[in-house]
Image 1: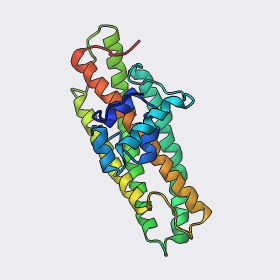
Image 2: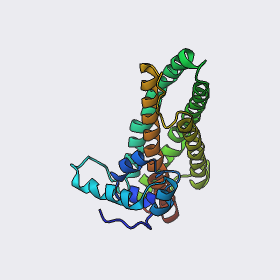
Image 3: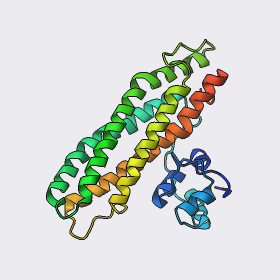
Image 4: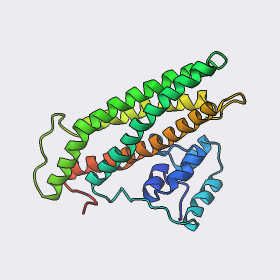
Length: 245
């Protein structure tokens, strides 16, 4: 993998999907903040650019991991993956983590006031994500599938209740920003998900689950912000199903 420090994190994540594991491990934002050049992102994360480049270069020497190139796949396939993988993950894990948060706060909240704040923030995040997913699954995603089918078959794009897809996409991007801000506050309060010395096994499990939830959400937002939405906008503007079979 040959990379230039001037490339944006977003470009690297799209061109080399396996790179997101490196960015996750270093706390480098590749979804909402992915338009920053790699050098700037490294400065913000207080990490040497050379160190990051070295870690990215080592990806090619490791055993390959199956990574779909969603920048070339049909939009319908990407949407199916987002809903089946990431939306399902949010629903499954939130139903597990909310009761676990309640349990840990009830046991340790008196001595650790941050737990109540984390509890409130995570519940607000879940509410935000559930409303977001409903709008995508009921309105935006079905329309994008129809738009792609029309473009592939040379038909006129179907009418939409919202006019241009720019309107719902801008709303989805704003939702992602809000979710990212909530997640960042949770991480800060949880001290980067490091439990204190008096933490019980449930607390350790909670912080591990919250960190995994954050990691999955970052990849989820990356797929939408950096791949799905730009391709949908391009398709609407030019009437072509770029990269579709």
